[in-house]
Each structure stands twice: as structure tokens, then as C-alpha cells.
Image 1 (cartoon, rainbow, N blue to C red):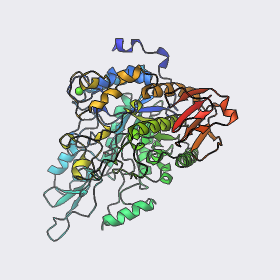
Image 2 (spheres, rainbow, N blue to C red):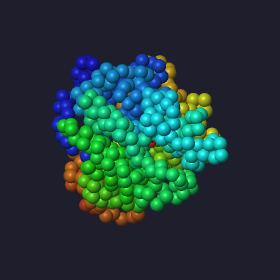
Image 3 (cartoon, helix red, strand yellow):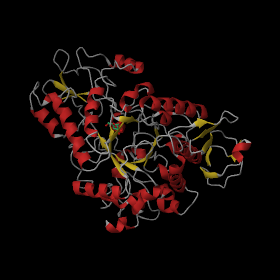
Length: 563
Ligand code: GLC
Ligand code: CA
């Protein structure tokens, strides 16, 4: 450990800053696929610790760690057996303590993923609920209902789970339990005081261990109205589109009260712990999660859902600048995460390929057909989009591997698939495994350096070699070099959370200026764009195209940073 940290820059040590999150670059680690220290094919905490120098060199301010709790992995760790422990497959609490100490020593904060909507079916509470009779206090921690129909064998309603199939699972004694996700993920009952208190305890448990913040899984789902009679699935779908808070399952008013209690706990710490909501709600409904009295920040998936289009990008930025001003929160920008097809691939899809993004629907290489992807174009546009994003006011959430420009891995043999989406939608949805393949670190090594052996829990394709860190590190034009330079420069570019559009000719070019004076110009079109005279005098400090820039011209599908 001492050796590992010896070469880290001492002045990166964390400043006691309560606003550190506002414009942070946050790097999402999907722990099972990041780095494997012991060679069993599963990424682990010691693996993460060993790669801290890489994170430092990348220049991120924080890490968001997807679930690392004990889990049977029915849903990649989002099925939690015990909220206050580490999965033995990933390490121990001691490994966690060592990891967080090393991150902090390197000037990097840690955001832990917390999964409050559902536990796993192996959680001690759920085992107790199954062993207890209908109506018992143990069942009250979850959502149990009697079956319907003359013999009570029908589910309480026709609700569909997000991963496919009925949202109700029979337990054999006439009752069913609700699971909005996989059957291994029974929904907790947030009207129950014991459930609420236990999560406050969990928050304190990790905050006491030094966790700087929380990413709140399915933050819009906790509160539910299950008053009989339950409405039909079709009625619910129609209500969802209304987005007015009247849906019995999503985005309900009672959430404010739940998160106000969390906020009080966050504020017990100095600096206060932060939180970011994963809430797939209409942009106009995000305010309540981002409010300072609630979680304080909420993911904005607008850019993730957008086409590579100047008009769409501008409208989204404008709308979210207003939003940030109204809530007092900062903007959040994201293109990729562990639930969606990587943006390098999305941007290489044929122009007429439409994509549907919603919770549970954010994976698009679906319908049993893999569309033709233009890999080169996808990467070019992803790089341009990324430099557009990294210049914006607010925080940037990056997903492991995007800094390598790694595309989605479309061809995973059925037998190797893990995502419940795949199993519950046979032949229709391939699921999310394609963005969760273990990272390539070294071109000519077993498992491309993911671990010391050739084991990798999802198969890595041969073409991963060309994306390896070892290859890209040596190349100043690589995607990795582009990210590193951008993140290093970002601190100079970032100032007040403001921007002003700079009017340029043509519908395909966007330019904005930050209070630092820096200007970000993106050419979304396929023809080169000429810069007007005042801009041609400026220094081009960064470009998403590896080729040396021609002064006064922005190449097609390219972003440049001007000082
Ligand atoms: C969130 C997670 C996703 C998970 C789901 C259920 O959307 O990001 O990976 O499957 O919640 O926990
Ligand atoms: Ca391992």
C-alpha cells in the first residue's frame, strides 16, 4: 500500500469542501468488471485499490461504486443480501476500509450505491417473512397480498415486472409478494417504520466508514399506494405517461418525507454526505429529488436519451440550466452507465434506428436483431459528445471503459449471459451484459490484464486488445489520452456554473462560453465548419480529433476547446 501511494501527488489530498460534488467528474466502477486481484474472474475491491494510480492519472474527482454487497447476483449485485457487509467474492470490510483510505489519500471521494427499493430474496428479513404466516410483522416489511380468483391462485393484479413477467410471485400459502424487478428482488414496504430506520442505520454505517455520498437506486420507486382495488397494468402505463405523481408505484409525494429523514442523517456529517438520485422521471419531476432538503442531486438522463444532434443538445442544456438554477442543485451529465448500451456504439447506429430509453428499457440491441454499427463513426461522435459534456457546468458521470472508447460487446453467447432481462424476455431483449464486460488493461496478457489469469466472468472479445490501456497510454491520439487531457484541463475551464451560447452560422454547430473565457465548439454535422474571425485568434487547447487541427476549421463530428 505504501509503495502504491508513494508516487501520488501529495497536494491532491482532499480539501474539506462541502460543495465538492457540484462540478465533480465522477467515475462509475462496476466492481465485478473493473480489476480482478486474485484471478477468479471476478473484479474485486483489492483490484480497485491496485488501480488507484490509474484513476489519479485519469483525473477523476470521485468514484461511484456499484453494489459490492453480499449478493447471489440475480441482478448484478442490485439484489442485496446484507446492506452492511461486503460480498465475500469481492473482499472483506477490511479490504473496503483499505480501499477507501487509499482513495482518499489519492484525493478521490467515494460514492456508494444504495439499493432501498428492494432487498434480495436471501436477505434475512425476506427469509423470516417466508417462514412467518400471512399478516405477520415479518411480512409487513415487504409487500404481500392474497391471491385472486375463486381458488386464490391468481396474482393480485396483472402488473408486469420491469425485467418481464408478472410482478407478483406466489409463495405457496395463498399469498404473493411484489417484485417490480426480478423475483429475487422483493420490494420493501417503505410505509414500515422498521424498514425506514434500518436504512438510516445503513447510511450511518457507510458514512462512518468514510463514504462521501450515495447513489440512490430506483429513488423514485420506494413509496407505493397499494390500496385495493389495484388498478390494471394498462391503466398504470397510461398514468405513467401523465407524469403527475398520481401513479401508485412511481414518483409519489411520500418520497419527500423519506428523503428528508435521509437528509437529516447526511447533515450529521462534516462535510455533509451527498446523494444522487437515479430517478427515471420526466425532467419536470426531477426537482424534488435534487432539492437540498431531499437527496440534493438527481441524474439527468436527457443527453443519454438524445440523438447526436445540435438542436437536441442545446435544448437539453438550456432546460437543465434552468432546472439547476431553480433547485439550487448542480447539473448532472451522463452518456453511459451499466444499464445502457455504451455511447460509442449508440452513436454508430444507423440514423433511422430509434431507441427507447426508460428504466429497464435502456438497452437497445434488442428485438433479436443486432443493427449494423459504424464503429469508427460511433467513436468519433462519442469523443465529440464527451468533450461537449466535459465543458458543461455541473458534474460529469463517466462509466468505466468509456475513457477507452470501448464499444458495446454485442456477441455474448447465451450460456454466458447474466442479466435477468435476457432470461425473462427470451429472444427479445439481450440485456445489459454487453456494457459490463471486464475491462482490457494490457493487450498481450491473460484476460487482457483484467486479472492474473485468463478468467473473466463475461467473455472478452479478441478485439478488446486494441482498446487496452497499455495500447492507448502510449498514443497521444487515443481516447484515453483525450479523456486525461480533458479532465486535467477541466479544472481550468470550470468556474462559476454558467454558460453563454456563442452564435455561429449553421444548424449543426454549437458553441458555448464559460465564465473562465473558454469556448467549447461542437460540429455535429458531416461537413467541416468554418469558425468566424474572433474565434480564429484563439488557441485550440483540446480537440476530440487526434489529427492536428487546421486553424479556423472544426472538422465533422468534432469538438474543440478554445482558450
Ligand atoms: C437500477 C440499476 C439497475 C438495476 C435496477 C434494479 O436501475 O441501475 O442496474 O437492475 O435498478 O435494482
Ligand atoms: Ca476476484
